[in-house]
Length: 178
Image (cartoon, rainbow, N blue to C red; front, side, top):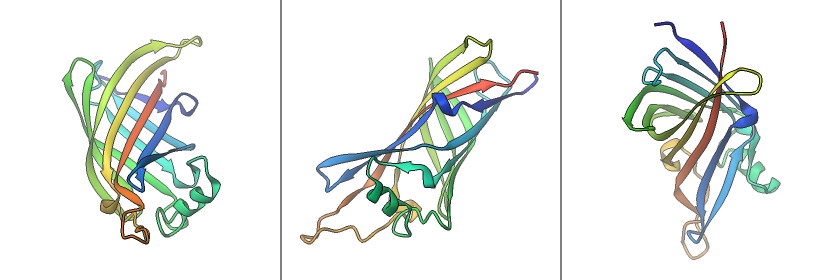
């Protein structure tokens, strides 16, 4: 079977994250710039191969001072590690429209295997005749696993930031026609 190439549509996709602040509320942010491809030969995408690159400089938490701090050596160290990457290893069908996406996530100089939960939204042709496929992706990582540390205790000794980062992405791909 012929493998089709699909390209991520940035205008119809988003990548978000959420982390606890002072362990009482969440701070939410997203990345404005990212790119990706998917290659698949099967109609159910079980042979899909995903690659995603995220521009760390595009982090946006709706607070410029915080965004600059996130880009600093305290967190992402964007001057040395300007891009995060995800490369899939498997896309396993679970049930109905549910899948597990397993792959390697690289943040800074650390690569770890993670599993995302995926809800396949389906396929449809847009107004220009292009085939599109949508995926709702969610997961969680521990920031310490990726050396995302800062001096993060309050004067009373409590944590400023939680350790778990919740990730959520709505990704839409456009099929490249022959």
